[in-house]
Amino acid sequence: MSQVLQDLPVPAGTFAGKVILLLGQPGSTTYAIAKAFRAVGAQLVVSGDALEQVPSDMSLAKAKVHPAAISALFNTVEAAFGPIDGLIIDRVGLGCAAAEDIPWKRWRAINADIVDCIFLAGSEFARRCFARGDGGDILLLAAAQAIDGAAGNSLESAAASSVASLVKSWTVEWLNDDVRVNMIEVSLIEGSINSVSDLAGRQGTNEVDTVPLARLGTAAEVAATALYLTSPYAAYIAGARVRIDGGEGLRANLGGEPFLPPRTWVRSSKV
Image 1 (cartoon, helix red, strand yellow):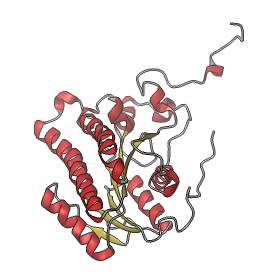
Image 2 (cartoon, rainbow, N blue to C red; image 1 turned 180 degrees about the vertical axis):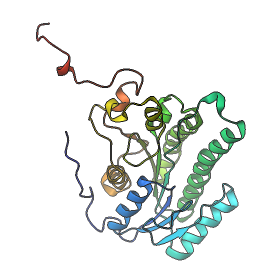
Image 3 (cartoon, rainbow, N blue to C red; image 1 turned 45 degrees about the vertical axis):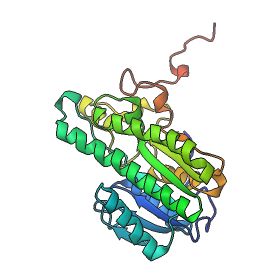
Image 4 (cartoon, helix red, strand yellow; image 1 turned 180 degrees about the horizontal axis):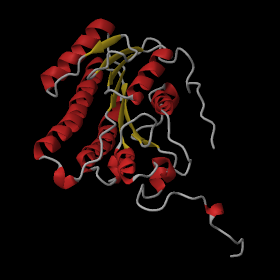
């Protein structure tokens, strides 16, 4: 089993003087990301539902998904700290639901909340970077299983796939103006809600059995990846979709027998 490192991947002070706006949601990944960025010197503003306990320099209520509300959020942050250097949107974590049982209003609400919010916030951030003649970083987080199309995940899959496409389009459009866009696809993480864990519980199986690395990931590993991708050390990485899943995405999650390394079932070395 691989060793899980606790040290941050960038030196202390890497983000000193940088203003980071984190649009998050209750959960271990948002908390870990906030903690990590503050530890390396960032001025951090967190906006979302019930995030008062997340470590930050300012905590704001979740903005309505409307152009005026998003613009007002940016104005509030900039009035307090100055221009925003990085935008991180953490939208990981919906449970399992059968497609035929999802009410149409909920389908519309979830897709609007995820896709519309990311589009409005991302485009607002880019416009402000262009206006001041400076660059910046956008990092989007989405559930890996939503992009894969895991069972019971249609509620989030359309939204996550749209977000993944935005990463490509925005990179091509904005990179010449030094606005980098990257994405983390988050799979099975300790303490996080996701459709695979939900489905495993309903089936009476263990989601760890689907992971070749034989363990769940940690929120700290997600935070470390976020730090690296938005740091100067990743300046040549743009339009990337980095997957954190212990190899789970290389096989059909919960679609067959638990993962077994080849050595456990290859009984002969003869070809």
